[in-house]
Image 1 (cartoon, rainbow, N blue to C red):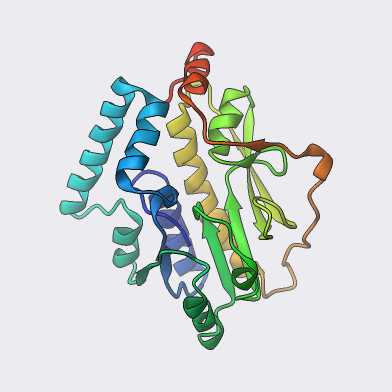
Image 2 (cartoon, one colour; image 1 turned 60 degrees about the vertical axis):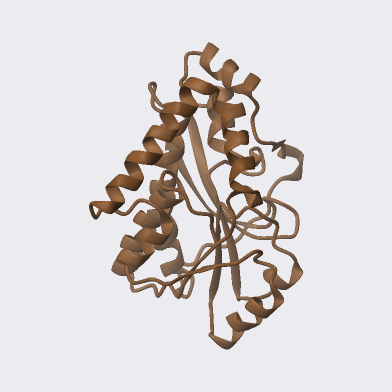
Amino acid sequence: MTQSDPFFTGRFFEAFLDESARRSIEVVEIVLLRNFNESTPALATRLWKLYGTPDMIRLLGRYARARIGEWWGHPRRVEAIAAAHGVPTRRLATINDPTYLRTLGLRGIDVLLSVAAPEIFRADALAAAPHVLNVHCGKLPEYRGMMPTFWALHHGEREITITVHQMAEQLDAGYILAEYPLPVAPDDSAFDLAVRAKLVAGREVAQLLARLPTATAPTPRAMDPARQRYFRFPTRRHALELRAAGRRML
């Protein structure tokens, strides 16, 4: 369960599907939800408020180059990458669609995996498969919430931690299955770090899924509620603070 873009989730599935093929993991389908669960104009306004006009123009340029690249046979969006691997995609208005959830048991789905899914999974979704997991590109519970790689960079962290955890009705809660540290490079921009995190996450998560039915499956452990913090989507002020600290957005 994910949302499609040519920069971040596309990079996750690029690595994930390559590694899944090597590990004999069957990816039944990829479900695409609406980006940030909002309209395209609202999403564009949200990004413009964050990046500002100069960087927003650069971001649109990167998007245009990615789409042109797809015309030349270089898939960048999730649906294009899935098609290149022969994996079907499905668009849903909500992951909590009861009709869709009933099909998972009928098809014998073992794992329901959330990758930047833009909504909370309710009780029926959490019970729809034996394993319902989330991939969060931040250390938990210290970096719950949105854009954890941005907030880690904003706070001057020397590394980020990609966390795979069992899902619960509370956002970014549930038992932790695995953590993967990733060093922050001196010249990393917020964009670069998010891309690199998704690539590493894609590879590592496929390897983790291959271990779930074996004796090497990790033992889940609880998060420490005393350490939890929650971060919302950053604002223009936060982006300016990041730049003032010598980091770039793009």
